[in-house]
Amino acid sequence: MPKALKRIILAVGLSLTLAAGCGDGKDAASVRLEKARNAYNQGLYLEAEADYERFLQEHSQHPARWEAWGRLLDITFSIKNDQEKGVILLEAMLLEYGEDQEKAAYVLQRIGDFYAEQKQWDKAIEKWAKGRRLSGQQVDSQWPFLLRMARAYRAMHNYDMARETLAYGMKGLKDSKSVAACKYDLAMTYTFLENWDKSRKMLEEVLASGDLPSEDHAVATCLLADVLIHFGELDKARDLLESVSSSHPNPLAVEVKLDYLDKEILSHKTRPKPVIEEMNPEDLVARPDEEGRFYRKL
Image (cartoon, rainbow, N blue to C red; front, top):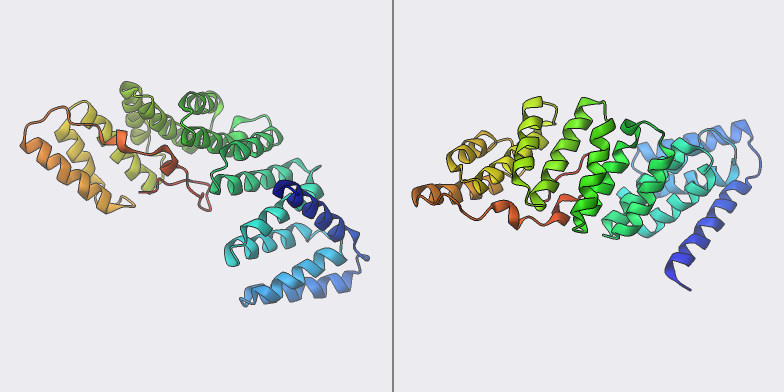
């Protein structure tokens, strides 16, 4: 039996089992839920997992089911690192919450993230595209999906689709921090398209805005230095690298580039090979942190 089909069958079976329930006795539900919460808070994750599963089996209509699903996901993905079971849980959640657009969009985002971790970009984009359609008409609400899709396209070396996806976001985003993130990613995409003028313009705009988180600001500054190296503006590039030598998430990478620039300046080379050409687009797709940001793997 194909692996994907087996997973779907397991998800359907799990969903039906958990929905079967034996009634929603208030006292029994409260006792079971409190027991699961206490075990989780004490770090007794296997015990908590069993209690949350029993809670879902026994109380099919309880309002705390979403919480129980979430805790099961935390245990499965973060504690046990059981990716296969984790995606089965997500697919079962999608069956249960398919009619709730907000919750279904969240689940689809998580499933897409799972496929992105496996570098199955087509499947990831498919899930994110569905989540985007459920997330509402406003581009700001679609942005987490658009950003993920653009980065997946870039990892697939489909830079035109990455650019188009980000350009769509630029037209409708209102939140200033989201606009900054969009310009930052668009600038990176332009570097892969070797459109150095647009990349420089975008980076200078986003750095001037002050709307990037501190680590992203440092990485964007380093990227602008790479672009300036392409234009032969070595002194400016060096000044930028010096300014982020202590704030960059990978100080060693900055030190290596500074050493490189010192040698180039000393030898009076004005058009060295752009450092940016050595970047692998897959290195720019990483697991998002709690705020949904992605960091370049340096």
